[in-house]
Amino acid sequence: DAVLSLNPDIAIATRDAVNSPRGLVDSLALAPDAGLVATGERGGQIRVWATAGEPTPVSLGDYRQAVVDLAFSPDGRLLASLGRHREGKLRLWRPDDRAGPGAWTEAAALPMDRSLALRFDGSGARLAVLCESEALIVDVASMQEVLRVPNPHREVLTAFDLSADGRRLLTAGHDGEALEIRLELRMLADVGLIGLPNAGKSTLLANVSNAK
Image (tube, rainbow, N blue to C red; front, side, top):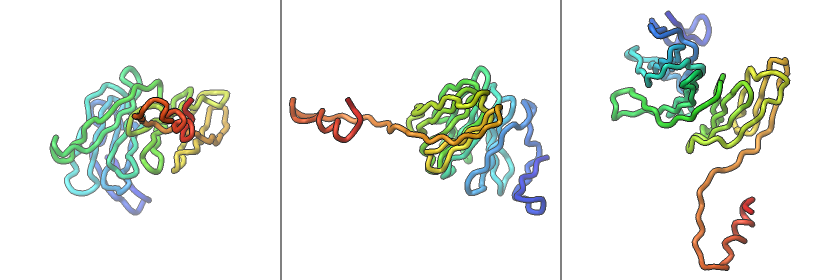
């Protein structure tokens, strides 16, 4: 049995048989409004539970990978999962009423090296992923990497966190140090300018961006 509680005297939900035959629960995530709980198992099973009403979970996907971390976006409309081993990927899931009540479908996936943890920033626009040798910043809308932060420690990375504004990264390594890193993120955009030759298109781009 599993009991989720704010303290030993206040239980917000009890869920029996959280573990399935495919493996033990290795990761948990609570939605910002505390209405949903996501569980990730060593055998690859991801399940989403409502904290009120019918305690029947909804299963997500059917991947044979350990689910090492889960996180809901700040608005609760996305669930990020991080797998490892051969099918290791960062996956985004979103609610899909067309597939049935409470159903979630996979919205996007990005291959990852050996990864340990993930964090949304405060807006939900960026995701940080902790790998053993680096940290990655991913743009959620495009599912593209926008920044790679090499491991600043003498040994492998072990823990991290991302500030709410997405501009500071805190990392820790096996060497026992914790470092704060200031991030400079580039904006992803596809922009086209249409105009006559020698109308000043290149000059405009040079003045409003770092384009060469």
